[in-house]
Image (cartoon, rainbow, N blue to C red; front, side):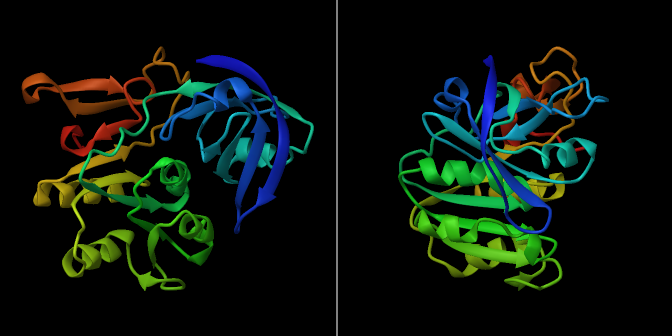
Length: 260
């Protein structure tokens, strides 16, 4: 973990309110792993005293990419960044996704901008599997061309039916689980809203499979000091304990997560 002054080298629109910020941050980008995140100090936002957490969308030896959606004051301030501007990054933070085990078929499930860390993961995995992407409308379905170019099969669902199957992303997942021959035991990697994560975990439990869930919690410090992002999980002997998503997570095995 380190603090790095990163220079903006690219800033592009994807779809609707989604954008991708690219920054030159060699110290962080060279060591970050899929599923980890960075804490960004948003410039041009005088009211902000805390950094904002963002999953890493992609990284190489020099630069990393952050996918975000303009929602509040912080992300709207980020949208004004231009090439040459500098931002302060803290990272890499948290524990990322475990490596795929031998003989497993990777199944990635993303909701909305939960696609960000999973795209990073898909690019690093040697074995390709199937990548399910869901969102409210077609504008919330991101990076399909990039995912396909990496060699992954893709399933899509939108709640309004504007792209792919109408319904939730788990509806498309259910069809695949029922109809497709699985080449090896599936291993799930998921990032998105809590309801989707819980549903993926339930399906994995029914099949006796493993699922890794990247949880999204409001964070303060990002390093485990403020206890703002606690999550209940099953500890030793099944006893519920509280852990910090920013420090012990954000990725947890589904069978250990206790949903309220």
